[in-house]
Image (cartoon, rainbow, N blue to C red; front, side):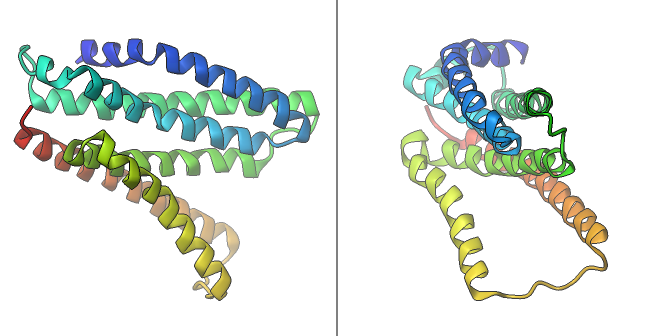
Length: 211
């Protein structure tokens, strides 16, 4: 298991360099503007996409065909991707918090509550995003799944915009603090349930897959 994760991390070296340059550019551009929350969101979302990058590398190298000749089970291969996703997501949160802290010091604005609360929300969205994509990639392949990756981002955005235009009132849930806590708890439950269900679906797909 450790070897599978280490292999993916080694494959991500070049992507990490590119990601580092992009983050540096974001820091230089947006921190002077006081947009630490934007940078935090971009950090988490870009790290969330890295697990998809490793699956693309595996597909190009025909890695799965070789991996299954070794004494590792198909469940372990799938589990390594989900563990890698969690590692990358939580690493991005730590990095996002560090960048937010540095940005707040440089701008003298301090770390706002909105920014701090926004980071775990983006983390949960990233977990849900990865959990939806991994089984689709195993089922349809990385090339066919590219359109679905775009749709996964476009459809929720389109629904949100339509609802915003329709001015649909949402049911009130007590005061604002209670409403926020309810939303956070609901998102946490959804992300955990999606992650667990996604893993078992991906294992089932991968066990039936022929290489």
